[in-house]
Length: 88
Image (tube, rainbow, N blue to C red; front, side, top):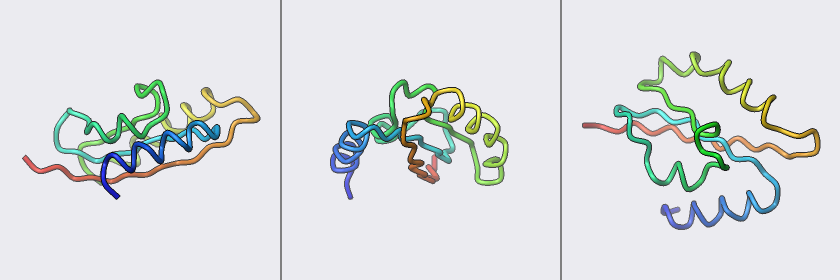
């Protein structure tokens, strides 16, 4: 699936009431545009990044807090997990 298809599918999921969160692994601070296009809005609370795979456990509490604080009881949640390793 290319980036355009991914963003379009994510839009359909969001319109169906599904919250999409991104967990990404990247070597730089810049978040790929695909992640921002796929994640639910606002992206600053739905996109989580770490610099390497060993740091994934460090975002678990932030992820749980975001899910618990940002979700009404009737909202469906879907986690879109995207692991990407960018090289410089």
